Length: 128
Image 1 (cartoon, rainbow, N blue to C red):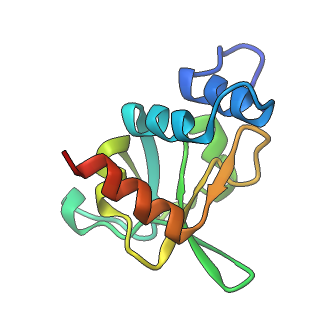
Image 2 (cartoon, rainbow, N blue to C red):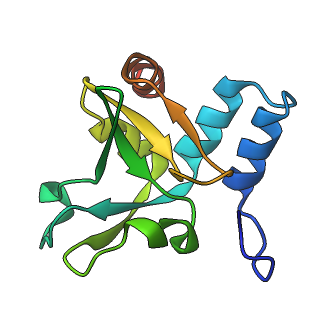
């Protein structure tokens, strides 16, 4: 959950609305693509092009972890990890075909999208 002293982000509000059935999943994904997101690198890096994003494995599936606010990544922070701020659109462009996404893992303000869904949506984003 969020700290009551900070307002939820637009993306976090979209996640809540989608969980309530008041917002289609497709609209939630577009909100994610239009938002600024935070990623944790598994190791220090000097160039965003070479960073290794944090991967969460669950039941044999791989998910790239992405966060909506620094407060929600505290459980995963380590001294050797770096924080990368990125546009959601750029994040979708970098998702490998074998990985899904997990937004705010472990939080009630989160959701998961399996690899196939992430790849399909990334294709939709980049096609014109």
